[in-house]
Amino acid sequence: MPTSDIKKGPLYVDSTNNRVGIGTSSPSEALEVHGTTPILQINDRGLYQAQFGLIGNDLEIRGSSGNVEFYTGSADGASSTERLRIDSSGNLLVGTTSGTFGGSGRGLIELNGSSDSLLSLKHGDTAGLYLYTASGEGRVAQFANLPMTFFTNNTERMRIDSSGRVTMPYQPSFRSRGSNQNYIQTSPIPFPTVLHNIGSHYNSSTYTFTAPIAGRYLFHVNLGITNGSTNAYAYPTLNVNGVGQFYTYFQIASTWYGNNHLTAILDLSVNDYVNVSFNGTGTYYNGGSECQFFGHLLG
Image 1: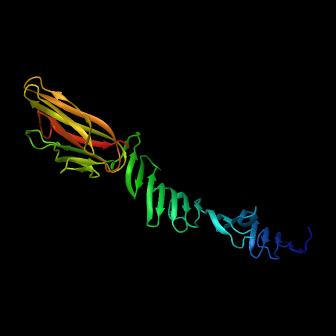
Image 2 (image 1 turned 120 degrees about the vertical axis):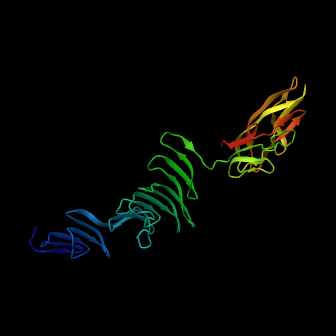
């Protein structure tokens, strides 16, 4: 290698500092390639700052401040737009240049729309899957550590614990019972005392459950004591929109007591309503322990 510098066209060799420049006569690194600004710099630590120009017809890869950035746009790069970035912390950003939840967490993946983040996956104390709207953050699932929890509107809706047990605290469900403490024939059967009513879909005044969503529901009716004279009969009926669907029948051979129980799974549409009517010449005891009605959304 000559001891003097070499300059020929865009190539420059700095023999004093052992540097090579292409498109620059003052390379600051072992190899430096210039356009209007440095687009490739290599030193003894490796490739530490780079802007790779045209790859294919409209994809560019660039790097700055420890980031690796992917662009699409015009073939000459003059009007390219950044589409994907791996930042200096190892976060993957799509459609955005900064992570909303960088913080102390690692491994953020963020997908961005025109102005609002659409999806984030985050590792750390608040690890999970996040969806966003213009109104802000909405946590969907938190799964870095068991239990696995699922959210809508930032409220936990379902949980799978470390033993695989699933709980859904907002699943529509109710349990009601009688309170008359007398033998009666009232129809529909009154169940005014509410023991639980998740979602408030059971009406304790009309003794009616109204389906909040279409689905398959389990119902049970218990008439723990029915009575009457010889040959008296009693049968409760489970009704959907006022039309009987299932009933259970009990006839008394002599003056005596018996039980009526009714269990059914019903496919309901939104706003279908369910209650229990009573038919017969017998009576039922409308006490809290003896007379109950309950239901639950299965799915």
